[in-house]
Length: 64
Image 1: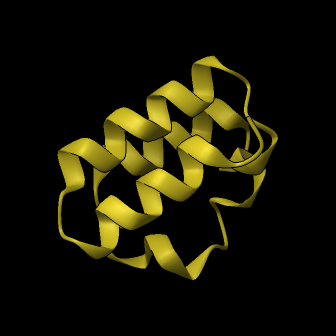
Image 2: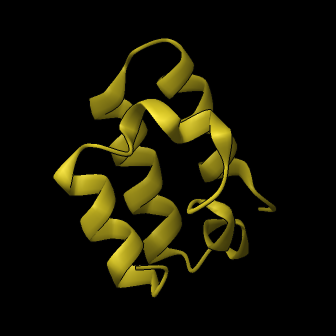
Image 3: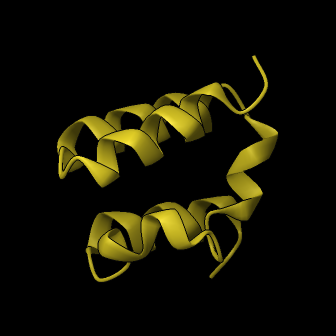
């Protein structure tokens, strides 16, 4: 699948559709998507960084 779930989440994030972005990121996490390791520094997700759900996801990935 490549980075599909992460790229989809980034698109939703740009559109301000944060719930859909989280759904896509959760899907990527469950699929063990390799692109998830970039979330901690990917600027496309800057608008989500202050959200506790994003911080918790980073912790589950091992990035926090």
